[in-house]
Amino acid sequence: MADQVYFEDVAEGDEIPNLMKNCSTQQLVLWAAGSGDFYQIHYDKDFAQSTGLKDIIVHGALKNAFLGQLLHDWVGEGGSIKKFGCSYRGMDDAKQDINCRGVITKKYTENGDNFVELDVWTENPEGKKTTPGTALVTLPSKN
Amino acid sequence: MAEQEVAQSVITDEMREAVGKESPPMTLEVEKTNCRMFARAVGHTDLIFYDEDYARSKGYRNIVAPPGFFGTPIFKPGAGRGEGPPGRGFSIPYKRVLNGGTDYEYFETICAGDTLTATSKIAGFTEREGSIGPMLITERETTYTNQDGKVVGKMHGTTIQY
Image 1 (spheres, helix red, strand yellow):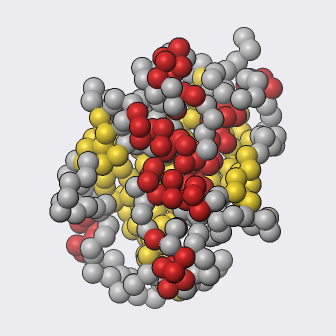
Image 2: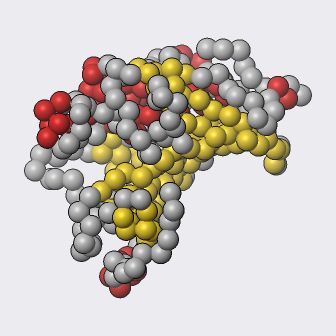
């Protein structure tokens, strides 16, 4: 885990450290069990192809959870995630890089809490944002 | 994508009446093993999702439920999946379904040992003419309440039928 990031250290427009993922078929099976989503397009190639896909695809909710990890690791022990989520706009293949990224869009203080709003997304190797989303987190203050 | 009003609405009176009505409550158990399994599937490295003593040393009641995890429904053979989320089962002419997106909102930390009660409702229907043709967009909201009666989180989900 990286050092604690503080509210005073961040500015609108800053990009947060990215998180790179690349899902093995094993990871997709783990996710099926962990999340309870057993739809076969995510682990059964024959089934996926019978629906017109060229191969199995990564669960949208797993990409959403990757964004949760991106934020959790960034806010550290002193911060917390208030909201996060994304739209599912594009499919990602297994065994292909998924780059999880975030940019700060706003920071403000309200009732003593230090809030930071972000745009977050996963990006495929062609640079397409397959799950654009937003997040709201709190960060600790140095004071 | 250029969006415009659909030529003919598929939203029926029955659907309009269903907006805002709460589903029967569903029980979700937040267990240590499931928290670990979910965290492992994502690739989390923070030990608060895996190690009870470590989580307690950081001030948590128990292993923490990783972001996006709101417990596991209780499975019973033959019970099916219950009524499922509201918004399914209406008679509309579209055959295909897409999960449009999910947003999570947290008010309290969820830990292993918690029992959550989830109720869902349809927040609204909208229709659009998109690049894939006319679409019906259903917005759902699920509220999670813990064993102490505290609302710990909400999930906002979007389903697209076209």
